[in-house]
Image 1 (spheres, rainbow, N blue to C red):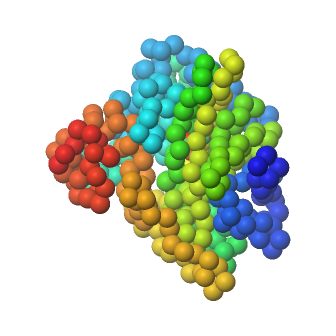
Image 2 (tube, rainbow, N blue to C red):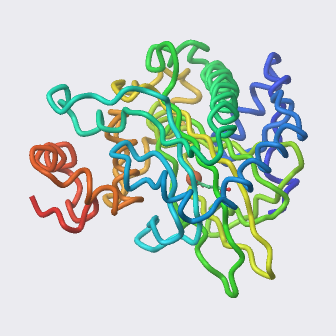
Image 3 (tube, helix red, strand yellow):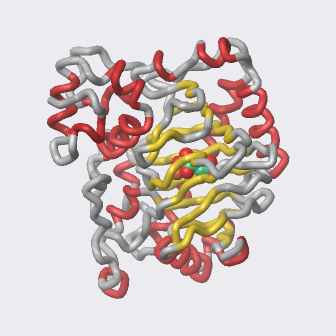
Length: 349
Ligand SMILES: O=C(O)CCC(=O)C(=O)O
Ligand SMILES: [Fe+2]
């Protein structure tokens, strides 16, 4: 499959029934598509990617000042070697930010996922980063909420069917990512599904993103100006499996090239439980339930579904901030259905 065969959806076309039918096809058959006419120009995207390049060019000390190890809320910088996917190290460095919030006190913490709530870590060496990325976050949040409503409409569930799970604003998580050049084929990021409702990816001209389709991995070649959108686990759950959270991965660039991307993940509020949408009979008969993988259970309680991924990806943060009592005990209870070793190999509670 080449670029032309991954569906291309125009956000502007979604006011028509034909546009909604194309969206429903892309989301249910492939789980991945390109999004165009989304309102963020190619020039603006270049600026964001240039800002990302400038961030990664800061000195190791400047980046380590905002290292994720300092954040119990999984915010900040990760050097290469600090992320695992599918049990293997990823060859990428990244900077994560989420909703800017105040952390809860130890007495206020009732569930481990509440520890995800907190402030971002912004580099003092680059004061322009916070305002630029906060603006981007707000724009991408609006685009994804609009898209989610269009998806609900395309499924015949009513455009506002999931609004109550989002409330005033969704939970958002974003990453600046740099994949350095490798000498041989390497895992930029291993095969995975994204935990939330929807993901948007802004990629530069360097390919590497691959999507599982049947027994094949197909290239998501960059199309200038287009975002790549994929369905997350929460939408697979909400549609009872009619929509697919598709496995994807990134293969590191070679031949001296590096790859930059910005990934944006939108989910329901962490306190929400995702409902199963009421689908019309013709779609309901094609919804065969969400996929079942004992190594990756899909959880309708949003906070736990999001935390599951964070704990596994950044085990150094997990060990530092999630392995003390009483949190460790609460964690073992929240994830009783998963082997504890999957969450933290030092936890055998
Ligand atoms: O860098 C990319 O193109 C995709 C990254 C991704 O899939 C992720 O971070 O979840
Ligand atoms: Fe992903």
